[in-house]
Length: 207
Image (cartoon, rainbow, N blue to C red):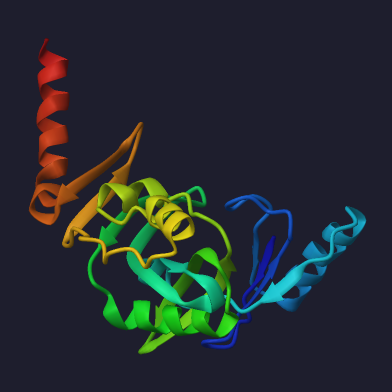
C-alpha cells in the first residue's frame, strides 16, 4: 500500500495494495517523484495499486459497525473513535456519535447489503469522509460485544427468527484498551489508569 501526499495544502492521495494487512505495505510519499518510485516498486512485484485520497487526521478516525438485514434494512449501529498502533486498533472511545452513525446507516441502506458492515472514516472539519467499507465483522467486535453491542448474536437471532433484534443497551462514555486482552473502563477510570500503572510498577520495583 502506498500513500501519496501532495505538498499543496489540504491535498493528498492514497494508493493501496489490494493484498494489504493492517499497515503492511503502506507507503507515505510527499512528492510525485516519490510516488513514481513506489509505483515502480509495485509494478516489479506485479501489484496494481489502488489510489485513494488521504484524508484528515488520525485523532479524528472512527470505526463504525452497521448491521443490515435483507435489502439493506438497518438493524443496529455503533460508532467508536479509535487510536491505532501498528495498523491495529489499540484504544476506542464509545459514545453515541449519532450523526456519524446516521451517515453510515444511509450508506449501508443505499448499498442494500446484508450482514455486518464495517466502515472506517475520519471527520474532516464538519464532514465525515469514508475511506473503507468492509462487508465483514471487525477486529473490534470483542470491544463492541463487551460494551453491549453483540452484532454476532443479533445477526444469528435475525436469521433464525426473522425478527428485528431489540435495540442493544450499549454502555457509553467508556474507553476500551487492547493489551494482552481487551479492557473496558469508565472514562474516569481511564483517566486514572496511568497513575495506577505507575503505582503498580513502583511497587514491583521495590519487591
